[in-house]
Length: 299
Image 1 (cartoon, helix red, strand yellow):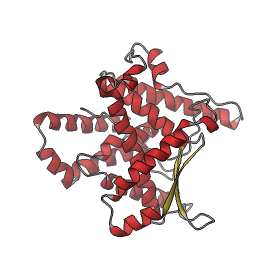
Image 2: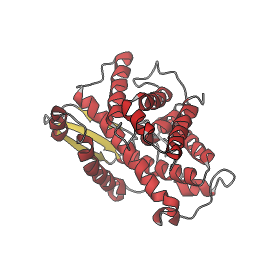
Image 3: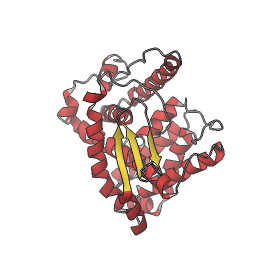
Image 4: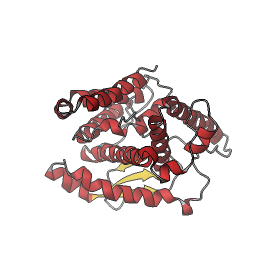
């Protein structure tokens, strides 16, 4: 099965994803459950000292409309924390479902169009936020597909619930791995005792180092970081696929996407797994990496 990929993540972008009240927000419980599953997986390839540190960190899913995740090295109570916003998890859920349906029904243009649409909503909400006006709600995957018949598959809601063509299975893997990559990235900030310096160049270096840690931590076949491209592709779109990061404390999402593909290709683990794969599997892997290259070179 080809994973035509998507992941970037953290910078605060206000995107009104749902009109549900936080008191009824299902993504808090969803996030807590995912984190509980992922933490033991993260420890499988950590050193003893890293495991000790990881176990000392408190993880929280926070009810907020901000799309972000943060590592807090020391709270007032002296504990280390990693916080993931409910809005980020909702975006991962929407993107994971859209990606799965676009891939399995061979409509890649639908997925790219949806990312561009989310970018437009963010830009619109930035302006509304400044004016203190109500924010625009983004369309979930199915309503978006139904309103874009020329480029999107026309599917009923039960393709996910019934796992038609393994749509639910694929989207679940993308969502799980995307959350895992974010947690590993934030853990790296804890590991290296990173904090904002006010120097954009130094801050970008910290982000690049955290990316590298997360990419390497996920290089354990059959797991690869390239399955977790949801956040990076989202933010590629939000940044307009720009390479300019001089005014940001994060590297450009396009360069992060390229780094993800390069790290995967150059790793001994990937080369060994590729050598042992069947010709059909090798083609699927190369198609996925070529897709990443194409997206990274889009602008």
